[in-house]
Amino acid sequence: MKNSLFPLLFLFGVHLGAQEVMYEEYDLDNGLHVILHNDESAPVVTTSVMYHVGGKDRTEGRTGFAHFFEHLLFEGTKNIERGKWFEIVSSNGGQNNANTTQDRTYYYEVFPSNNLELGLWLESERMLHPVIDQTGVDTQQEVVKEEKRLRYNNRPYGQLLTVVGKELFSKHPYKDPNIGYMEDLDAATLEDVKAYNEKYYVPNNAVLVIAGNIDVTQTKKWVSSYFGPIPKGAPVTRNYPKEDPITTERRIQAYDPNIQIPAYVLSYRTPGFKERDAYVLEMISTYLSDGQSSKLYKKIVDDQKQALQVGAFNISQEDYGMYLVFALPVGETSGEVLLEEMEEEVAKVRNELISERDHQKLLNKFENQFVNSNSSVAGIANSLARYHLLYGDTELINKEIEIYRSITREEIKEVANKYLRPNQRVIIDYLPKDAQAN
Image 1 (tube, rainbow, N blue to C red):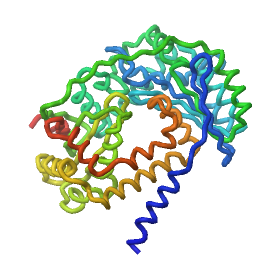
Image 2: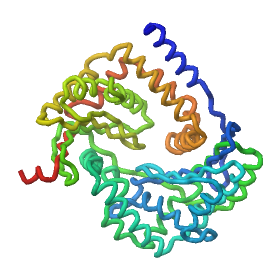
Image 3: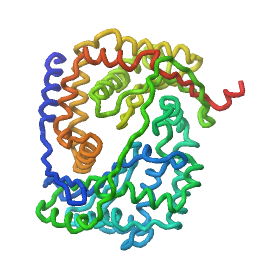
Image 4: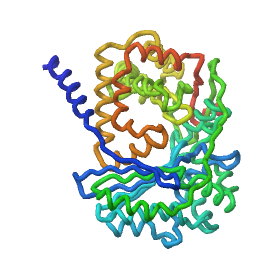
């Protein structure tokens, strides 16, 4: 039975992965890129706009603006009364949300398909007629600061990625957290905010995706009507400083008053997500720590019972990535022991070929992830927007899996050697605050 199940799973993954997402894309005269995907399997439609603006797009002393705008642009518009946005959506059978990374901001609505025009109107209002005044700025400054307190400042391990960013980057804006700093949010003026909106929230810095049960001809007419009149903005240019290579291992200590169990971290700077090597690093992190049968978990948590939790993950970003291997100790297990055990597993990937069986398991997992990412209309909309805006290749929604399928065991070893060497890392002892006094 075992001998027959494995190839069947592989064939199952290949078959599902071969399903093609059909779409049409074009540009309006104002530079807005439009992508349409018709899916008649359910009477729903997702309307989404992704702006090419994230936490890294700021000046010194004004961090966190992109995330702040994620909130501010729900305040209201010329034709939507303050505080009524969510009421309009929910009363028409829809749901909506937004999220921000260091590289982009994403807004979306999911409606019954007969409310597509409403979704288009809402997003065109956000782009063309946002009301940006002192009342909205003051309100959302407090909302964002409270979120920062809850999700970062007062949450166990909430500052860990902020520490990693500061240590891996000294020049690039990735050195600062996406949500920004309290003092920068306090210092933001109405003029700062308006200038930010005029620079980044323009049609030529965005992609509009409509995915679901749509009449394509009618949809194009609505898109032209609602988005065509929006003025084109000035071209957005970026010229962020390059980081010097990390060539010598460093070790630092950071303290968190919200934790009782320390975390020990091996952190590395890695390439941006458009690079092929970033795909390989994703496979390495899955190999090391995805699931209870993964190498790190089985060894350090299950067999040797040295850690409560262990993991490896590649934080994908546009310009650079961050690769982390971490563990939380059990009982009296020392940080030194955990660091040695983690390095031993990373070194095996650098020095040895993973087994053919493990390689095939990785391929199957990525086949499954690929299929799941395109299993809903909302997921397809997000993927279409992301691949066009950040990767410059919408067709990756269908062909990205081919990149993973082409990654060999030899390439995994080569990439681990390229980026995950001891002299390229920063070791972080992330300790309880009371340990600082000892």
